[in-house]
Image (cartoon, rainbow, N blue to C red; front, side):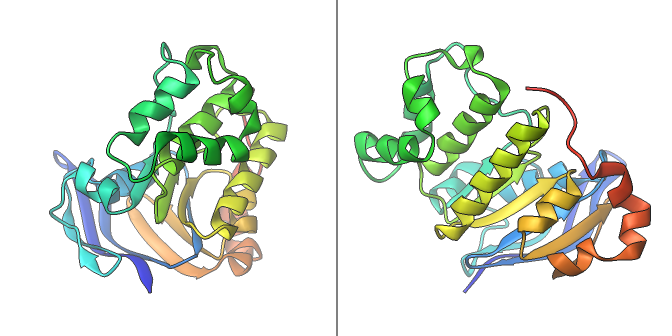
Length: 241
């Protein structure tokens, strides 16, 4: 089954076109990555799919048209977004953050929180600690956990490596790969093109609001044109934890 299909998606901010006639799809069980420089429109694309940006075009999720659905309706149908910048509640504890995220979700909080703590044992150790006191890597784990506690069918991640030390970035990508291998479809937006494509099934390139590609991720890694134009400038993660 095709998990997600985006057709002729357009996003505007006034006279500025952030996304121009974008076509994209994610098959059930796939890990698909969209790479591109800052300002290319990647976050606008994800926010539109999540229902957080006004958009024109057609979005089909699990064979149902959700183009006019509100953001909370898309979440209930199994679509979760981990936004750039994490947006956790810093004054709340890890447990409280998870409780807020789980409101209205099927299953008991005890069982679902236990499941994510198995994935992130470090968060279990810090479950009574306020989120603002966690390291950058731990905060990203918490942001992932808040999305996963609802058992999404499609997990969308916006720049999960941003601001993390290279060692933590490698751990984060391994976690994303494991989430996908456990059965969750993933749509990943990422500047770290080399590492993102190394774990993906397929990849797209976004440049100045325009989306292209959609082919095999390994082939994109070996494309000399993309190496010259993009990978050489963005092959390593930046920032610190």
